[in-house]
Amino acid sequence: MIDSLIEKIQEKKNPTVAGLDPKLDYLPEEMVKKAFDEYGETFKGAAEAIFEFNKTLIDALYDIVPAVKPQSAYYEMYGIDGIECLKKTINYAKEKGLYVILDAKRGDIGATSEAYAKAYLGKTDIGEKQEPAFDADSLTVNPYLGTDGVQPFVEQCLKFGKSIFALVKTSNKSSGEIQDLISGGKPIYEHMAELVKGWGMDNFGKYGYTQVGAVVGATYPEQAEVLRRVMPHTYFLVPGYGAQGGKAEDVAKSFNGDGLGAIVNASRSIMCAYKKNGGEVGQAARDEAIRMRDDIMSAVGAV
Amino acid sequence: MIDSLIEKIQEKKNPTVAGLDPKLDYLPEEMVKKAFDEYGETFKGAAEAIFEFNKTLIDALYDIVPAVKPQSAYYEMYGIDGIECLKKTINYAKEKGLYVILDAKRGDIGATSEAYAKAYLGKTDIGEKQEPAFDADSLTVNPYLGTDGVQPFVEQCLKFGKSIFALVKTSNKSSGEIQDLISGGKPIYEHMAELVKGWGMDNFGKYGYTQVGAVVGATYPEQAEVLRRVMPHTYFLVPGYGAQGGKAEDVAKSFNGDGLGAIVNASRSIMCAYKKNGGEVGQAARDEAIRMRDDIMSAVGAV
Image (cartoon, rainbow over all chains, first blue to last red; front, side, top):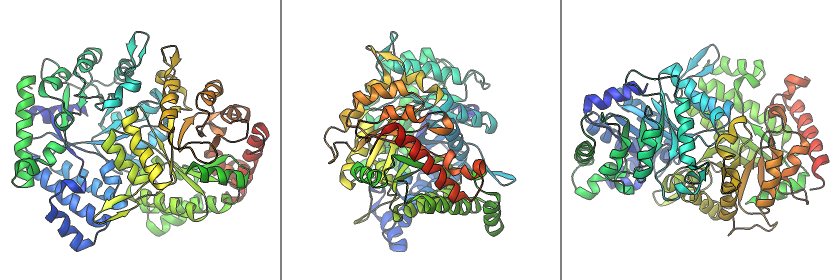
């Protein structure tokens, strides 16, 4: 449920999410060396080092941030071991009371989207039973295929109390090539926003937001302002703050007047804070997460 | 390399690819029962049954079809065990000389797409070494994020002799909601086609086709005809034949005059042929694959 994310945001007075995109380069050398000494220079070794890193970050952040966002690609690149590390990371973060948004940008035709939705949000039929495979709280979804490719995700959200964030206007430089094309007087991202709004119409939570959120990049504040108006009841997941160039006053455009409506992601700036500012991984990440929270809260107002 | 796919198509005189989307329901009951008896009603049991099923299909098909297309979602839904089965399936199919197109529709911003590209097509840095994680021959890619989200896949293609197929016009009913919107006098899928064409410009193979292919659904033959003209040097991966309603004369629009330019997928009709026509899984799949080959070849002409 988006409600449970909102409650964690309110409780911690912090509308931000810490991205867990752990390239090996981001880890302290000694942490990698220790795992390689034990498991060899293998995917298993990399996965063990990354899980150690993630645990350090989660332990340092769980009482001040409401959510984490593991980026699936950085786990998939270490094969089965990496994906096992992803699963352990999801479980560990949930045990610590964090809301877990898995950033995997899945999307396909209906029957296949249903398989993805069961894999990441719902449960998979197995003989007489149903078992969860990854059991994240939320998943990012690529909606280029349209309604029948998204509906199965919405169904699993409603069935298991989960949420999704569908790509509307992404934070990257080339996002405009398709997303900004004008059709019928409006850019494609606005057409997508109207679809996203429609997908969420039947499932408002108690704070007035639907289970179907939108990804809206911090790097395009003017577009975010328009999208905020088009989708007043849609929660925004906002990447692009910090390392990608988005500032607090930019991300503020994605919020509603009540300080709700958006959650801002930062990954590298938190994970690698120890490299920039010195100190231990956990303490440096915590300091940066607090700095980010205060920076954003000062631009957004009370939550 | 798309060249290696083309050579396998020519050698087998068969421009089709067998989809491996193995829901447990598609498997013979006794095959599932045997695995559940050994491993319990678990993801491990499901994964073992599915690998057995895939092996049966691959053994029955490898000398007549050039390629297989595992759909990643149907493996991911069985968690780590399912993904291990996917990896074993990719390896087994490659050992049998098949070209493996992994249908995973990945796509993200640049740095993240690079991680996916390394995971599925290239190699991952691990200490001093580079190791492949999944090592498919080809990957489907969702290009809604534009050039900087696709370029890392193209780079891994060039580096490791692989190919991609980017979504242009998908086979599902709702595909038109975004893809058919008109901008500047042309539908979005045609804008996407022009991007796809551009991404492939620097890497023609010896048969005149680039490493950057396009997904063009069999269910939209008129659009396919236009797209064939817009992207003359782009290989098309054509889903939607058979169970989804596409006919041989529809898929023929995706081919060039020389019988090259497209590869047509069928999944359920081959995997479940034994349910419809009786007989053993492998023999029924082989008979259906031959029927499909002949059906398509009669509409397409010599390859």
